[in-house]
Every structure is written in C-alpha cells, then in structure tokens.
Amino acid sequence: MATGSGESISVEVIYALRDKAERVPLKLAAGSTVQQAIEFSGLLQKHPEIDLPTSKVGIYAKLVKLDQALRDRDRVEIYRPLLADPKEVRRQRAAEGKVMKKGAGAAAVAQAPEPGDT
Image (cartoon, rainbow, N blue to C red):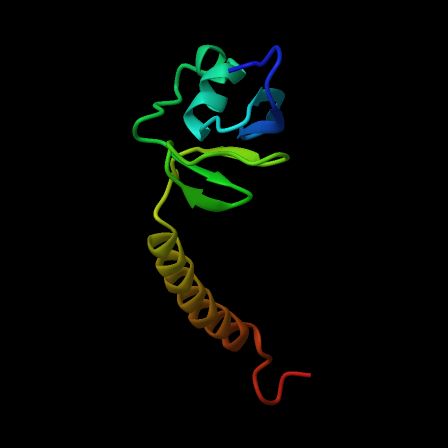
C-alpha cells in the first residue's frame, strides 16, 4: 500500500466521533481502494466499534463502495450508524410542537384577565 518507487497518492481518512473527528493523512500506492486506505489508517484497530463490512463509507460525503479506487487528495469518510431514525425524530418534534401550541393557547387563555378586572 505505501510505496517505495511507484506513483503514490495522498489521501486522508476521517472518522467522526461525537466530540471530535479522527483524521489520518496517508500516502498510498496509486490505484489503492477505500478499504485499503481505511485498513492502512489504523482506525479499525483504534476504534473496534467500526464494523467495516456493514459501515457506510464515502468520499467527500458521497457514498461509495469499499472497492472504489482512490484519487489523489480524496477524503475517505467512515460514517457512524444513526442513533435515531430521522423521520421518526421529525414526527416526534411535530407532535410535540402541536401539543405545545395547544398547551400555550390554553395557558394564555387561563392567564388572560377577566372582563371587569383592572
């Protein structure tokens, strides 16, 4: 993967954690794949929670397969699984918003001064 005499490319592998991102710059042989870059980066050993066969990966936010050949200056990204389904989260927020609007209206009516109270 690393080269001694042939052409090489510079790439970086990124793995975003909750509080920071791990960034590993690499020099690889021309024609190296996404999988080779990830394996060579050492991130699989450092973060055993990464399950490469099932993880989604991309190059500059575009999903790619592990056998995708890399080009010079590519940024390989390893994506973590979502903690919650985005559609379900939106549904819950929408439902909470409706409840809050209804509740706010009732609270506003309850706090309004009675006619004749001044």
